[in-house]
Image (cartoon, rainbow, N blue to C red; front, side):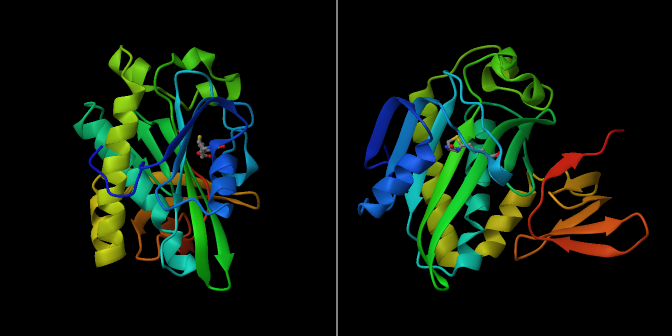
Length: 251
Ligand code: BTN
């Protein structure tokens, strides 16, 4: 692997509760930046907003320990590092027409192919470690997924009509992530965001933002340098949304 830190230590298991919990434990025990945990299946895979994450065999379920010298607000933008890396690798190496979906999903043909979960451990304003958990629906047909997920999800196997080598996908992703991560630490968020926006096909479209409290309909105008989504609501007012859950509006 052509990396300096990412994936220098990789811990593999057939079955774990969650690769992110495992990575968190390793980080507490002093694991180095770039340590990766990967599992064939997860029995308690976690998604954003406390959701369950279905993790059947054939998917790529992994987490990576990062220890950036950043404030918490800057470290939160690392989800863009991961989603850009996944969008680029699946596009450039595997030929899929990927889109990034704010804040941190990757889609193909309007359906989710990858989800990213960032969990931070902070000391005051500073970050001790951040665990990026990445789930790629790879080598399974979408019918193995739970009914509630199936309608909005796809997989590499479904899109390409064939299976891929998970080891190659992991290697490509770690290489790309390290390159983008180092560039972010060196040059800041603006160039990363520019790249990310090339895949952001939701911009300029009517979207629905739903979080636990409210649901908003509006035109997705832009993503700003804080990583926030700028939305123009139906009454013409603008809203800046820092976290939420975006789904495309029904036509
Ligand atoms: C989401 O879209 O809600 C985020 C899903 C993140 C899933 C990955 S799979 C590897 C890692 N381990 C977990 O328990 N979750 C993340």
